[in-house]
Amino acid sequence: QVQLVESGGGLVQPGGSLRPSCAASGSIYSIYRMGWYRQAPGKQRELVASINSGGSTNYADSVKGRFTISRDNANNTVYLQMNSLKPEDTAAYYCNMGVVTRSGRYLEVWGQGTLVTVSS
Image (cartoon, rainbow, N blue to C red; front, top):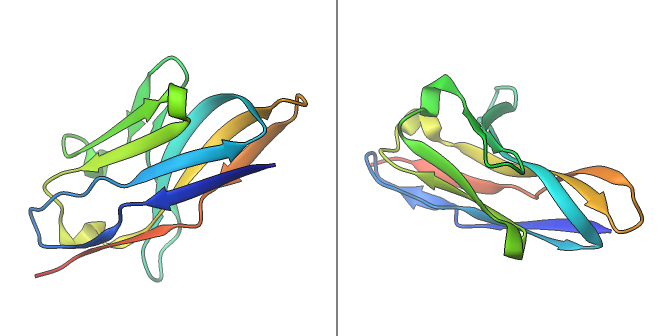
């Protein structure tokens, strides 16, 4: 019913920037929470940043001051501006949304993941 498509990952040098995006499509009435998670090899998936429908944001301590999450409600899209990237930011990044469908169901939906590699 609802699909998330991510783009914008890639290879970047330390200190560089990337801006992945995630667009939702399907039977959407409203989207409450949007978030980005990441999972590095051999580690558990962790929350990177989230933003609710009111625009309030939450960040992992490791990315505060470097990453900025934003949302475009008209296009059901969430962005993650990542600056001053470090090798330890290397991971698969997944978007997640809390969606109310037109039929009134609440769904937690995940994107397919986009790989971010920070290396010289």
